[in-house]
Amino acid sequence: MRIRAATDSPVPDSGFPPARRHSVSCGTGPGRSGIRPRFWHPPCVTQPPAKPPANQPSENGAQYDVQHDEAHNGALGSRLNWLRAAVLGANDGIVSTAGLVVGVAGATDERAALLTAGLAGLLAGSLSMAAGEYVSVSTQRDSEKAALALERRELREQPAAELEELTELLQERGLSRDVAMEAAQQLTERDALRAHARVELGIDPDALTNPWHAAGASFLAFTVGALLPLLAIVLPSAGWRVPVTVVSVLAALVCTGWGSARLGSARVGRAVVRNVVGGGLAMGVTYAVGVLLGATGV
Image 1 (cartoon, helix red, strand yellow):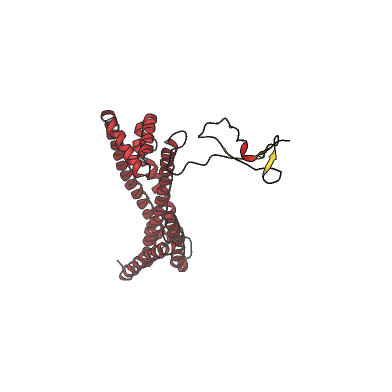
Image 2: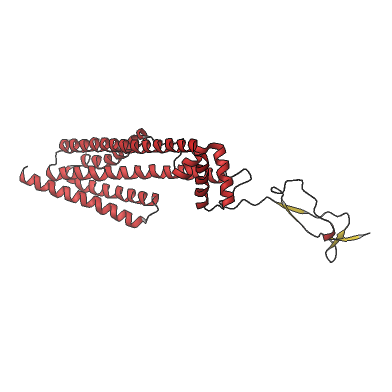
């Protein structure tokens, strides 16, 4: 029987294009000194093609690597901003309402007066937060629309300059000149405005900020935060109102401080201490003022 060395038989072509061909590794099989019978076929292990390196275009172009990442990061950032705003809104509701009701408790122990002051503070604060957030986000939305309108006009009047600008922006993100040019061309052919909005402006044209959503979220967050000190001051008996409120508020401030630190990737201990000290100082000052005014009969 004729014996051939393992290197005499090349690996048969897989039939796939070069970009998709799997790498093949075959053993020498049985036999002595690394030789095998003529009709013996070695076991082969196929491996899938390696994933393209980061910041490199995939086989279907660069849209996935650039636009998908931009959309994903933008959506994630938007969610984090909403969560952070909700935590801070609840924190404002806790501190402001707690300072108000504790100050009134220093002057009087009448439940009706405490309830009236607490409800007035809750409604005034939540409506003020909602109105301020609506105005702020409306201004931001108008600015985004103006930036998109300007970008749309520039794409219509200076397409070559805008293509070069997009190429340079992609180069700044780590792509080589050739890859950046190819990516910019493919993104422009697919949707030029969306590509420039996401890469250049950091705006998702399909998900502009909604002032009504922001106002509603701020109103709800402040209301939820303000309910805690309000209930803590009116439900217990007269002798326990202030202690229960102080303990409840400080515990809630620990939670909101922890939440804001986690969302902002900051040090938890420092954020919690800052939150607790600020809230405790606010309640202490307002309580002292309420006791002083109650003693003078004002």
